[in-house]
Amino acid sequence: LGRSSVARLDPDPIELDVKVALVGGPETYAMLYDFDPDFGELFKVLAEFETEIRRDDENILRYAQFIAARCSAEGLLPFDRSAVARVLEEAVRLAQDRSKLSTRFGDISDIVREAEYWARRRGGDLVTEEDVRTSVYERARRSDLMEVKIRERVSDGTVMIDVQGSEVGQVNGLSVLAIGGHEFGQASRITARVFSGRDGVISIDREVKLSGPIHDKGAMILAGFMNGTFGLSGPLAMSATIAFEQMYGGVDGDSASLAELLVLLSALADYPLSQAIAVTGSVNQHGEVQAVGGVTHKIEGFYDLCATDGLTGAQGALIPASNVRHLTLRWDVAQAIAEGRFHVYAATTVAGAAELLMGRPAGVVDTTGRFPRSTVFGETQVRLAQFARRWHDGPPH
Image (cartoon, rainbow, N blue to C red):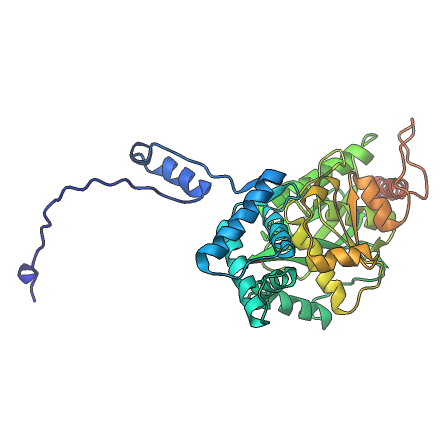
């Protein structure tokens, strides 16, 4: 067939009177607005929807009414008070804030339907708390294969992570992985080595371009804290390397900066860090611990890892104090904490975090600019002074 033999269609215009509504996230809207000059003219009205609401009596009542209406509309078994309360707990978990309820009603409706299925399966005439709990558990179990595989690799020694004992220059940092719609926390070993030099704090992940800009900013903040705390009388003659061990997919975010600073101080002071307490949190240049995201998933991930070989009663996680309001832990984790088999600690400063993980006082600077001996900051200061003398004197002849 030649080009001339191809039939051509010329559609006729027709009158059309419609309204078009686009639904999407704020990032998509911003991109379209910035790159399409006609977008703002075609879509003049922007309506933003809140993804969470206050957890107050009025909204709790509305949530209960929503569950009842869903059951009535779809012919589902009614929910008893305990089941409604358990759905509300899941709404709080989705909001990741104990003072909020999620408005992700599609996800809530799915939980309601699946809980009703489990109630019918056991032959019940009411949906109970246990049915909702089973629904939530089974929803997570269907997509947790990667999470289980990662724990298996730690348990069999392929991935090296200690959850007992203590080590110098080694700490467990916590992060969140998202695969599809499933999010879970995982622990990573972070290590540090220190020696005399002028290179400062070197992030190995940054040097090989495995880190993102926010992580790199966090690494530079560590240098600011170290210089501001220990370098007032002169420049630091220190080189230090920090690395996420067995991490090959790249790292970003500043939620590991507290762990990185603790592991650096441990290496300098030669004080061991507890491996039973995993760490998440960011820091600023003044040593204040700042909030991060995903604390619930991180704690639950470390709990699951520790529980694989049995809880010792000494294990737990350290989070920023400003994140306590965001904790919406699973019932089994909350129960283990209540029974003293697992622990969650909150820190406001690097000094407080160092005292918890190293079991030593951090130390308070005196009027001469010195920290007391046998403290974390004091021994760090002594080691830095040794490095400075070695650098000044040069290698032995």
